[in-house]
Image (cartoon, rainbow, N blue to C red):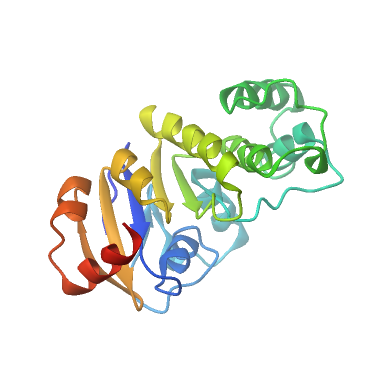
Length: 221
């Protein structure tokens, strides 16, 4: 799989087909058994120290299906924690950037709220802002709308769409087929741990080549 700078790639496929595992390998959360992964100059498959992992995750941020916010910390504290603690950046400049990011994800004014006071969609947007606070070159989105109710899915997808439109290199594991068609530059279909087929969205969805791809799409479209 190749993802060019500024490109958005959608990963789709049945549950258990390896989509999330692939993202976790790219981010160094899972060590690949074989093969090679290069991300923004990092040879991910060769990483063997915490220093290297921190450097990788500064460049490659990941947003998970579960928001994983610290419930005892405010929205602002959740966002500034990693840049100040891990990267050692000055708190004042980090807070200024965090405020900018909260406005970006349309949560300005929620700096002092706690996660429990926010809706699921708002919490997920805080998680996106937290990932962006590391100023990454690549964003990984792992089924970020799967735990949300239908009314809040739209607001999270709109945030991701804005990032893609601004040129953020992104890899999205998603079950939102319409969103994948509209936003992604290319779509990859996985099944049983293998990339079965990939292509530009209109060709992929309208004229799939592989029988397994056609079978899957017949059930989800």
